[in-house]
Length: 214
Image 1 (cartoon, rainbow, N blue to C red):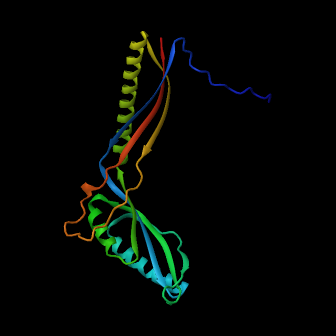
Image 2: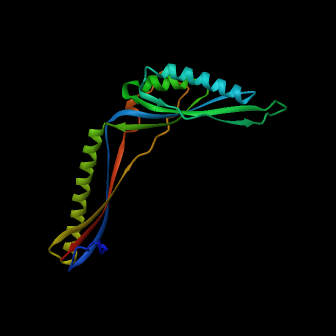
Image 3: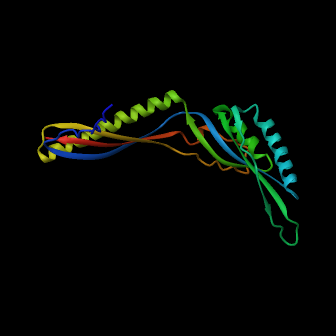
């Protein structure tokens, strides 16, 4: 087979003025569930003792979270390290691992209450997740809004320079989803934790738009 010549993308022709715009739209969606990340640790006078306490605490945590979590828990392999004693105390060992998973909206408060009472457990992050169908609809609405705003700005620029036609040549789109949010556990939990007060899932649509004004 003879070698084929590379195919070069042709730039859209424009006999007028090229206009480059950057637009972005942001919106929030309804919380459907939460993805959590926990740090779990154990201590002991030896590496094996630290691992033993870590396994005991992991078993207690699994038991308390089992009726609350959605799907399965993810637990990576543990790591251990020595920690020097202070004021003449003997050296101790620490074993660490993580626990992550998802919890439904209605179990938000019971989950945080259960985690807050577990020894050796520290909350690392809580991410609000939207329903996939709602998230897709939100992305489409944001895209349409960004295109409308870009067209309005291009029309205004065309009028200012005396151009009569506006033609869209190119769209470069990049989206962003907000990262996990840390949840601070208050010492006073009498009023409970309200999922309605949790950060809502936020999506951002960014576009680089190129127009030809003639």
